[in-house]
Amino acid sequence: SDSVLLFDSDASNESYNIHASKNDEDSLSSSSSEDSTSYYPGFLDDPQMVQGRHRHVMVGDKVTGCVVSSTIHFVKPSDLKADLNKQFREKFDQWEPPKAQRKYIGARVIEGCYTLVDPTDSIAKQEENDHLTSDDEGVVSRRNRKPSISTEIENIRMPISLTLSKIRNIKKQALLACINANLEVSTVALACVYFERLCLDCRVDKSNRRLTFAACLLIAIKINEANVALEHEQPSKITKKGVGVLKSWIRSKKDGDVFASLLEFFTHEWSLSLKTLFAAEFGVFAALGFKLQATPSQVAFHFKKIMKALEWNPMNYLGEEMYDMWQECLSEEAIRENQKDRRHKERQRRKEEKFLKLQRELQIMEAKNNSHRRKMSASIYDSIDDSESRVINTSTFEVGIEEANISNTPPKGQ
Image (cartoon, helix red, strand yellow):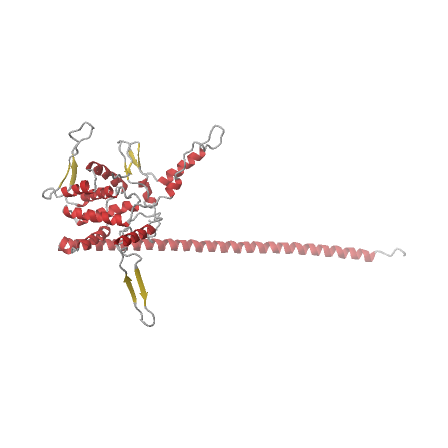
């Protein structure tokens, strides 16, 4: 059965965790950044990653001219799938969650309070305490010491079981189920944003991908759908084994039980129990850092991708008025991003000017100190020369007196 390791609770006997087998973001390299937690759509599931190595590129020469042609060979779907999964694994082989996001990964309930804990800091403190513990003789005790898990934390990567084909298949299955349930396409796009954020935090693997996406979809329904709420009563008709029947439903202004097919899809197609799904929902909420707001461009990326896959026209789907509002929202976000970039560049320019100013002041101070040292050394040399000249004059005067005395002394024979 699927399980999620997202959240450890001391208040209840059950714990649901997203398996912790795990962005500089400006470069979007395979190593995560230490200072930023921004989400870039298309980084995990790159839409351009559709071709494998079965392609031949020919560059023109003097005979054919400046022509570049690409020939895509026929390949079996299984070989293409394996090749794309290999490219995905090579891209995220060294991927780690950002440092600012690790406090949510190591979050625990401590004395009834949800506490953010950075696993790296806690491990370092634990190692320091273990190193300082000593036995009765004052020697560091190592026999009963538990093996350090710092190496495990440092080597946490994205699970090998999570592949590109699994990510795309689960999105495709969820999209078809949401279309049958008459959900908004933007709701599915928002759920994709949540799901990819958890994948980039290395919280999703093969075993919990369905439960994670289902929980993300429920949260997206509550956030994006109009006047929607999930409700469930207390278990009734408790059996001899202590198991009760949980009645759950979704209330909306829409006519009929339009979401019944979605819940049926979760229970029948994905083999998820509603009890487990509702219990994991808050765990996913906590794993997202309680940050459910997504920028219009992030949602628009997945929205356009879904509309293209369904071969639908966004203007016909949204309507002219809603489409204009959507485009206006995207343009406003672009303006804000440009202003943010300008402010960032202005701050960088001020820092550089301040640094250059301090560097010039330091150079001036060094020049003054050097000139002062030269003056001091010159004065010392002058004093040394004066003392040497005085010594020479004194010695010359003494030699002259001795010569005069010798000349005035009469010979011994006289």
